[in-house]
Image (cartoon, rainbow, N blue to C red; front, side):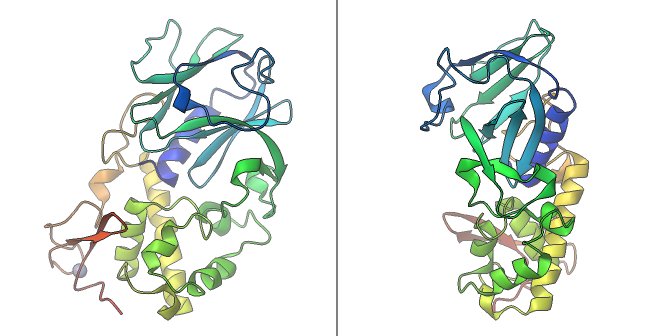
Length: 296
Ligand SMILES: [Zn+2]
């Protein structure tokens, strides 16, 4: 499942081509590709994105959206297996193609390919971002106002109200397991199973230790570790653990060779040599070193 680094890799690649391009048509090929909302439809002849010029490609956590020369956003959530491609015309269309957009300059198409159909597109109005993040221009699509800023926004001081100290305090106010808190997109966004395991391994914290027993210094070290591992993954082009995530050009990311915990069960811990274990957690898996990450 794409997490922040994978979505950021896609955002960065889209942002090199899409801004300034004008949409001439949007075709929806699968009913689940479109999230219903109360506003105008992407399917209708009155689709307000027809003739719209792309202004920017923005991201918060795992959510991606395009802004235009009019007050709408096209939200794209990649779900479990969603991919965005910008093939040159004439483009080959995958059997998992769920929606595509054409542009007036006729050079490329934007394809939304999604084998497992948990991803979606949504046409939304923009509303004020209560965190005032400068990296997204102070506005956010209306359906994702509850999503907390991500660690890139927090560490780069893009938001006035969501500082590193505020995130730390919010995490330690929770009584549930630290991994569950990290996966809660309303506390901090963008962290999923892979980077939660990597960050907890780096900070030497057991995933089931309750957040409220951690000290401020430990949580700060965890936030630094999470941000660091995600930053390195962005530089490497994201992680391709399950072959479902692909970059815009169809290549895999290369970060999986650097993972220390996720998917490493049975391998020696890079710090102490003890074998990494896999535990069942929240219907998924946690990977940890039983020696370096003692449960408290
Ligand atoms: Zn270890």
